[in-house]
Image (cartoon, rainbow, N blue to C red; front, top):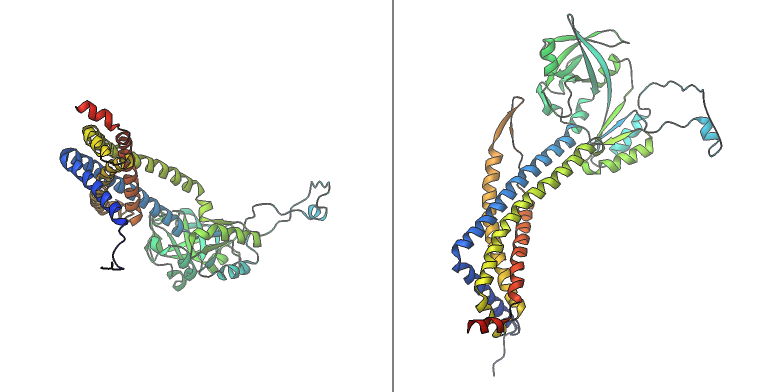
Length: 431
C-alpha cells in the first residue's frame, strides 16, 4: 500500500480544475474558428482602451498641473486684516439677550493691520512643517519723467517668501534675494517696465499720498502671464514697504505654507477661530474653479466611457454569433451533463478573453499616444510648454477595469440566452 504525499493537491480539487480547463478550451476554440470577427472585436477594444488612456491622461494631467499651480503659485492660507463678521458693540455685549437697539453711534477709527501678528506666526510655526511669512501690501505711484504708473507693492521677507510661493520661478530677470542686497530694490512686471521704458538696474521714483517720493532701483522683472502675479504688482523688502507706506512695524497679511496643502481648510478654520482675522485657504479662494473642474471630469469620463461602450459591441457581436451557431453543440453539452451555469461560463469566458487581449494591446496603443502628446511643444509667452500627461498606473487600471466590465456585460447578455437553451427541442429539430 502506498501513501499519498502530504504535498500533493487534494483529489477533490482536480475535477473542478479539469472542468474549468475544459470549458476554457471550448471558449478558445470558438474564438479561433472565427478569426476575422475575433480580430475585429479585439481591435475595437484596443482602440477604445488606447483612446480612453490618451484622453483621460491628457485631461487628468492638465487638471493636476492646474491644481498644482493653484496650490504653489500662492500661499496655501492667507490671513488678512479683515474680519468676516463685525465686532459687536459694547452695549450689545453688556445686555446680551435683551431688547437693545443702538443707533447714531460713531465707530472708532482704527488703523488697518493685524494686531498681535507675532502670536499668529508663532502658532503657525508650531505646526510641524508649516511656514508663516508676514507681509505688507499697499499702493504707490511710480514716476519716470512725465510717465506715471500705479503699482500695488508687497513688502516681504525674501527668505520666508521663497518658502511659501514660487516668486523666483516667475522672474524673467533677477532674484528675490536681490531685494536684501540692493538698497531700495524693487521688482516689477516686464510689461510695466516696457511701458515705462526701464530695465533692470535703472532708477525710478516711488511715492504715496502720505510720503515723499524716493528713488528705487529695479532689481528684477516678472514674466508675463504667470499665475498669482499681476502685471500691476511689485515686490520690495518688508521694512522698505513699511517706510514707503508710512506704516512702521505694521503688517496686513500673513501667508502660510503647509506640508499637506489639502489640510489648509481645517488649519484656516482653526486659526480664524482662535485669532478672529479672516483666513482663506487656497480651496476657498479657488472654489469656483474647483467646481468647474469637477463638472469637467464628469463630462470627460462620460465621453471616454462611451468609447469603451461602443468597443464592447464588438464583443457582444462575436459572442452572440457563437451562441447562434453553436446551438447544437450547446444541446449536446447539456445532454452530457453540463449545467446551464457551465454553458454561460463558456461564453462569458470568450468575452473576458477578448477583453484581456484588447486591454493589453490598448495599453500599448495608449502608451504610444501619450508619448506623442507629451512630446508636443507649444510656445506660450516666450517659453516652451508641453501638454501635461498623467501617465500613472491609476489610468491604466481605470481603463482595464472599465473595459473588462463592459466586455463581461456584453458577453453575459448572449450567454444568458445560451444557458436557457432546451436541448430536447434542438436535438429533435436536428433529426
